[in-house]
Length: 207
View 1 (spheres, rainbow, N blue to C red):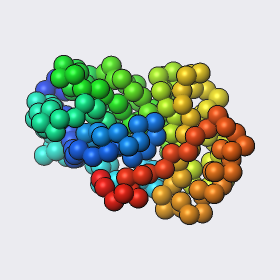
View 2: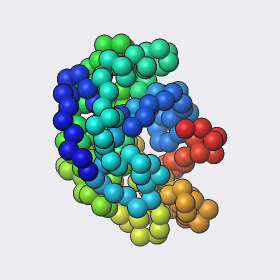
View 3: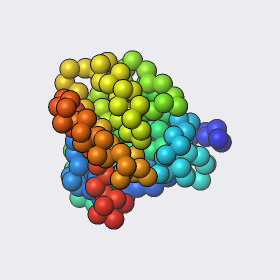
View 4: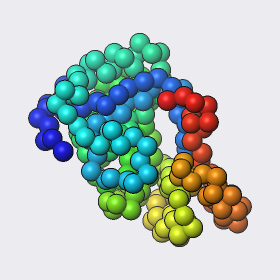
């Protein structure tokens, strides 16, 4: 991965940004402007945005440009995702968005200390890079991707560590959804602290 040189006070590496609907988890169905940061070293085998893993110099954009895009979309909700967005100092980006009265969420593996005061912390742990303790404390929602039966036990280990107000979700891995969704349904019915998250944006064929 290229080592980027940029000033986080005014710049951030962006793979893409777009206005759509949140497809997963607690805010599913809510209109949201997505800011997908470039760069990730977590390396999930089932990642559906592998093109976000490498961050390049030409992807660095000014924070003012990104915030302007958000404001002109008329959104009141931004989701910062990746890649792995917590790899970077996002505090200046978040501050600029909040100054425009925009609510900010992050979707993160929890592998890095968060720099920035966000409104909603979606914690989606990965087996390839362990989360830090802060993630369990900050999590507003825990979203565990389930691709096989053993992942159910793995999900419970994380659920045991999150704060008492965290909302728990199991989400079928998209490529195995037909096989794994019935298993999750059965499990959640027997363990009703959990909810099911599905990737509604993929069923709706939107970004």
